[in-house]
Image (cartoon, rainbow over all chains, first blue to last red; front, top):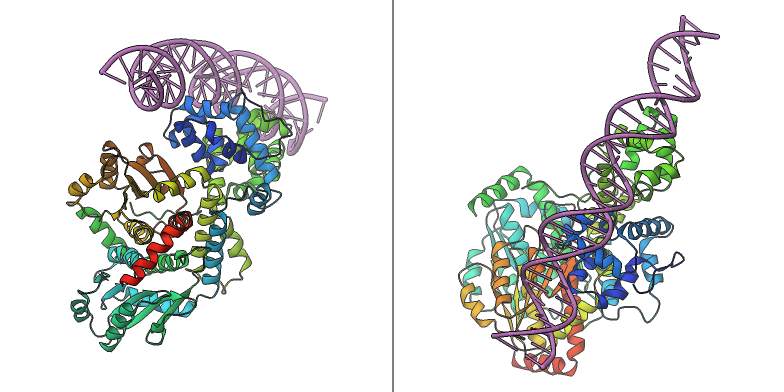
Length: 286
Length: 286
DNA sequence: TCAATGTTGTAATTTTCGTTACAAAGCCCT
DNA sequence: AGGGCTTTGTAACGAAAATTACAACATTGA
């Protein structure tokens, strides 16, 4: 229809798809997206399978590849395979970066992605294994209650961890943010309970205060914070420091979330059958 | 219900081939060799092409894959594709495991970190730029209200985004999870409002229902989901598909959070002075 | 050397896949 | 609100792929 991608066309189909999105209809874009997010495997499947995956009919997929300039689906697949073979020479990330010359870099997306990757790497490289394991043990000790507390932004992380933990063990309590109720909540925290606190920079006074009071009541503090360490690190028994720098007005919590999920995964594994049975029971209740 | 969705737990076909060479006949070995030296592309071609490449007849290739234990050639191809996907989802896991000598690997930490990195890369590599920008525009349109909704685990993400958005613009509302209040909340959603929905697999019925009702009321849906796409993708105007696979019983939301933060960063930048002034005003109020 | 067994390719068959024609549905503009 | 246009899916068709039956060939051991 339009220009046919010739044999010597070195640009990847992925790039070609990205360049063609505007010409596509809504459903065709769905196909495009499925192809890109599962590249190139999705396109190597039979049309029917591809279509089903994109929740679209087979002809829509055909029209999509037709708009890309291929005479037919098999031709499209052939080029995908050829690309796949050529690709094995150089690693993926390099290729992607090379294929995207200056000016084509996605301005607000790529720098952020790079920062998030760097934060993850930087965080996990220095994550203290002993502390990590010790925290997992704490989380798996069913005799202790686990309380979770976060600041303005990190409250979401506290909730996220609470949602998972409460599925694998009893006595998990999220302390809602916003002042007022906190007095009552402190009373619930007893000797040798565990308080997991999230506190990143512009460390929140009320969070710090709550946690300090909890220590005074005999609770053990696990602190998830940034690389510059919340003032709470003095009181905390365990500290997990995460990198949060991002090319933005805001800090990034990606590394904190990853650590939280790693804890969840480890605790679930550690509790083994107990967690499994509990999850099954809860499933049945719903 | 409880099986762990592992990143790649099955041995690769390549290894299986290597292990089976001795049981193969001379011609079948040629096929095996061609497959291994052009792995996996060669096996994704039609039998005839594969056969021609190995200078062997089609039935020989068929007998070869039969000896590998596959009921038929399509089954063989399917597994190759699945393997290809799993590999792209976590290209680092294997390498990292091989690189770090036994005993130095931190068992529950490193695999998770690698998976998170792979998810981030896989997500951002093909994040549709146009959709991303369009969503940012939506978020910055102060004439529209923005409503945020998440499922059991992703509710935290909805809150996280709400916490940031409400600092840079008015009319941001988080829809709390848990049924009951939802009827009322629907009424607040008007024509041309924006509803940002988080829905990852084991897609939640009530979330889907709420969002569908919102569409019926004229709202535009932005869906943040996993690579297999929530059923809501049909209703959604924009879909951001993220990778969520992790070596755990639970899926990982790291990529979702990164996308959310990228949106926040872009929107903050886009609103520029308006956001800045608003933030300052809010600071003064505290 | 011959026979028996195992290996391989040719050709026919069957199934699946890609393709296309057409009708329904959605959308936009008047 | 209605009419024309675009988009999408359904169903029938044709093409190509996978599969199978069988005959030719090679290989080995007596």
